[in-house]
Length: 66
Image (cartoon, rainbow, N blue to C red; front, side):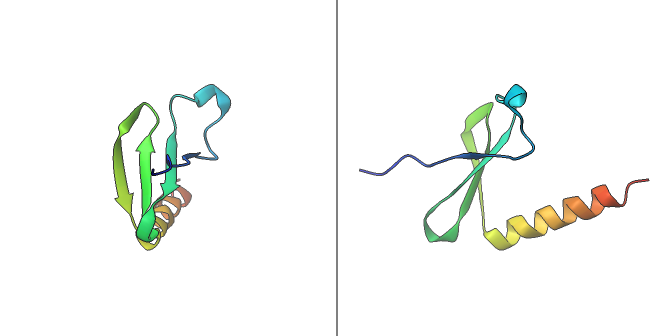
């Protein structure tokens, strides 16, 4: 029997935001699965390298705002 994934909530989500957060879990083969807590049946899959590139891009864009 397969174990249910252990979803981890974003550190930017507080208890007040519980139904509105991004969650992720590790899957087999080194894949990372992401979902929006309000729509848990819809998931995205990515590699650690692709997720890291996305996060670097977002941080760079946020840091360059006036």
